[in-house]
Length: 379
Image (cartoon, rainbow, N blue to C red):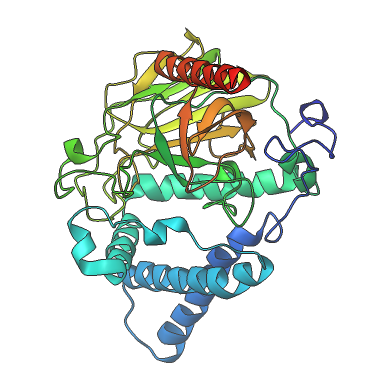
């Protein structure tokens, strides 16, 4: 990130008005530790078994051994290393929400088993493997590029005003500006990413049994440009996951982000909108879009566990080597209360207050308040 993309380190947090002190769960490299340890461990074990124990080795054994060690290392680091660095770690509110789809009958253990199985199978998908390698090396370059600049990134203030990329009320399933609230803090390009879903009053995200895409409240909803901009990348035509309701990332996917679009909203600010319905993107590279224009439909494509919109802001056009940027949303209603601009985080119910319906509601609310004030003065 260029120096002219950074603001003063003591910027104000729109939520509280206080100085935004950066909190980090470790260095930019911490997400890479499990991967490297698993690779070294798998290589050492394979050497001992083949050279010393004289075991006949097959390529599939290498993949299985590496993935198994990686999952174990990731769990250990997340549970003991990263958690100890985050002394203020908070429990995810989704743990109290209904489990979507038929997998709910298996409970949290069933979810974990399904997720790990799909993760294991995805390593044999050459498309996902190549993209993961690109992301790994791209993020290594990002770590070097931004070494020592964590505070600058955390306190970054955007050049333009962003609205929610959605209309109506949505639930922030994942996301926040701190290690305690972000679901992908160690993945630099997605450090400040958000996952949006729609949910009823009981936090259920679908009707029926959740086995069909049409059951999900967010599926097919319009995705909107968060600000004016120019389309710089479009990926469309990728199939949607066949594993609806089973908490399994699509290990057959050919693109981890599924159908997605990247929009240059300002110098050094690129919006990333992912997991859209195939053939729902009405724009092409080079097209100009206005804030609030429809740019796609919420879907279930890519390496995802349920229909949702993934949105994040990044400092460059390349997904694999960009650094994620914090973003505030303007003209927004959060948990029923209006605010001019705010940092949203997981568990919040949010809606864009600039829509015609919301504007009408705010007008009626203001009129009732003024009428109540007049009546009290007359009394």
